[in-house]
Structure formats: C-alpha cells, structure tokens
Length: 85
Image (cartoon, rainbow, N blue to C red; front, side, top):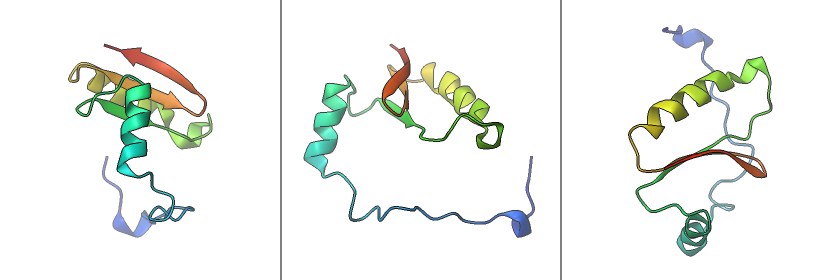
C-alpha cells in the first residue's frame, strides 16, 4: 500500500539519542547476556498494545526474520516474548 507524501509526518525521537546511546562495550555486554551474537537480530518494540500501533506488522516481520537468521528475538519492555534458534 502506498501512502501520499502529504499524509506522512516525521515523529522525531523524544529522547536525545546521541546523549543516551549505549557505548560499544555496554552494547556487547547486553547482547552477550541475552545470548545474542553480533550477526543475530534483535527486534525491539516499546509500543503499547493497541490497534493503532499495528503490532501485527511486528509479529509478521519477526516471523519472516526467524526463518532467515540463526536466532531472532522479539523483546517487549521487561520480558522476552519469542526466542527461536
């Protein structure tokens, strides 16, 4: 489905991503603690469970990626929803 450019609006981050970006060491530590290698994919979602957020698209994307990568994980704040090896 194509959307007219006139209906698209950019919603910038509400957080300064330069200031609050993890350093490489912290990133690698977190990936290791979750059992993620450098080539593994992590899909992160922080949206609330509402129809407006179109989480069906997230689930569909996760399903497609899980067949292409050794391990794919979908996170939700505070817990891991799916883990496939």
